[in-house]
Length: 135
Image 1 (cartoon, one colour):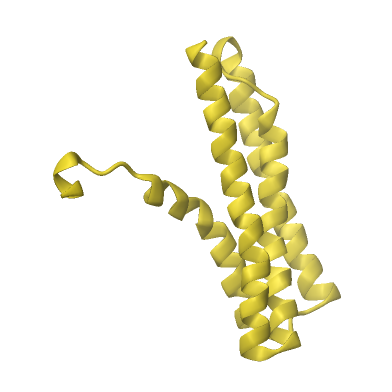
Image 2 (image 1 turned 180 degrees about the vertical axis):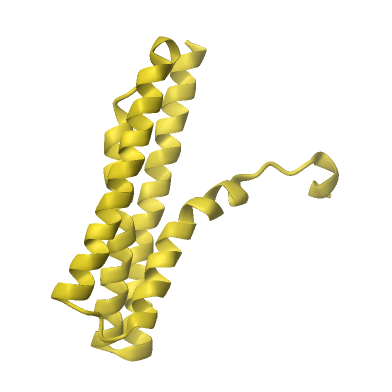
């Protein structure tokens, strides 16, 4: 029972992270539109989607596998999912820069990096503070 609760908690955390990343894309697109107009918005949208789509792929690939008795299969699937995420990222970057080069690259890269760094900020924000700091 405790193991199922831990798995459910893990899935909720992954879903929460993906939702936060998905919210970041239109927010950054809006900021790009405010600062630089349509070219900034399109560049931020492309950058955000270039970071978001591989994250969804990774979560989809890894989501159906469980650890426990099949730890070897889990690790193998984890590596394949990460390799697929990397390959998809490279393909999306190449596609964006060949098919529709961003007219404002700074917004592209800021949005891309912001979506990627979201997964670093979520655990930091959720970090439990010692009782002595709460006063």
